[in-house]
View 1 (cartoon, one colour):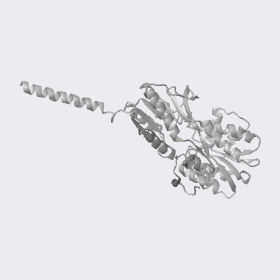
View 2: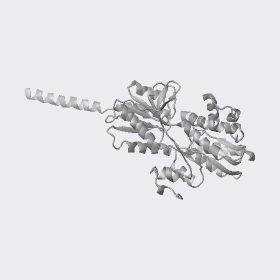
View 3: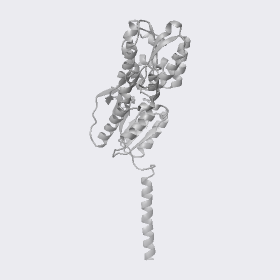
View 4: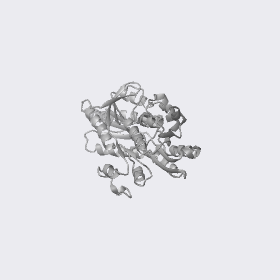
Length: 368
């Protein structure tokens, strides 16, 4: 009887250990230090960011997991909850919708997680600790300055396009562009071709958030190439010959720029066009080489990822990260680390993108 009791006790102890082990692993795996949530796999930019994060973390002592929200705020919140269940200490998140993401990051803050908004600001909440970004105002200003520098004569038709109204960056990009374009609209260099809202505000150097929203609501592409194509086709169909000829086009990013450029190139009354972009996507670099897109704003994701991961490591090491400015998110001033941007056109593609080993020359045709 004594031997049987001892055997049962030993078996019981083993069962307890097994249950404890199972309990420790019921979150779906081992703990994760840094959780990264990116908005979609359907845009080359974010797939590129994923790879850059993986490269940056190759030699790191800290563990990470990267999840995609596929353009859904609901999925984004699920991703954050999944990462919280894995014990993350730092959350790096690019919101699909800056305002809708507030509830997700508030849940993270309740768990004591440090929240870093990555490339897009999360708005209307105090649950954001840091913001790692390219200077979005500078992006828009660079796009606009390119159009100004290449404008010939007066009354140059100006077609305005913007990103998604749900993305705070879209407001910053357009605000930066407007500050450069507006004086040239007011003095007659440009003539607004496709926005009655912008036309009504052409004498206003400074625009309120509401005024920006009205223009963006009229010319938004929603960061979608098909939306951009359809909108450009609608605008050119409605435009008279006086709004064609040699034109200037403010396109918010590379994906929309290529679609818009294709539409303008197919219109026989368009003599020439200058069209902007951003992100230095491979397809747009080929367009620039081929003369189909005029420029792109190169945002070196390697630098942005390095800044984000450097900040996360500082936090995990118990230190205070270095910041270079702040952004008002509607609730608090969020401390920010800003990364510089570079204008790329056909003249400096090789020096900025190939010589820096961002891309390989073999990935393009016609590159001299």
